[in-house]
Amino acid sequence: MGLVVQELVRRSNESARRTRDLEQRVETLENRLAALEQLLLERFKKIEQRDSAIEAALRAMDESVMKLRAAVDKVSKQLEKTATKAEVQELERAFELMRPEALTLKVVE
Image (cartoon, rainbow, N blue to C red; front, side, top):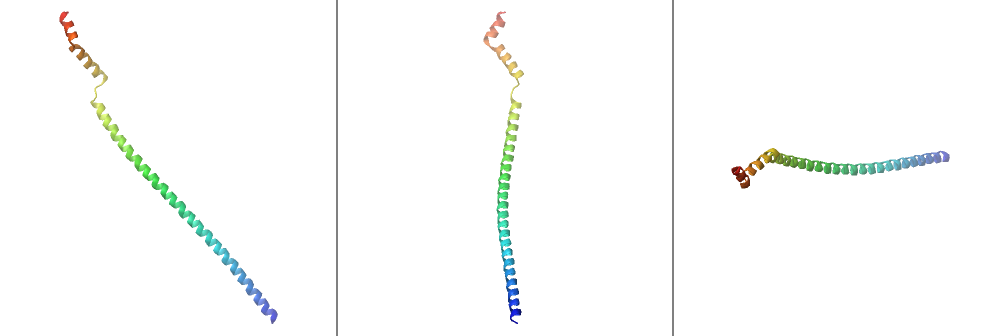
């Protein structure tokens, strides 16, 4: 009977050891999983921050482009109002004809 009890105790101890080993493995896996989850959360936060920064930069660029378009339109309208080179030359000729020297030369001739 002593041998049977010893064998039962040995088997019980072996089962307890295996259970402890499995529990340790599970705990190690749980710790690794928790660390991985934490790492993923941190990376997602960084990605979200980058996305937010990119979105803000794109909004700022879009606003700048709209301001540039408005400025270009304004300059374009102002350019439409300015005289062309030919018109300026024509005005110069007209002013030249109106100068007193030009008038006296025509009268003298």
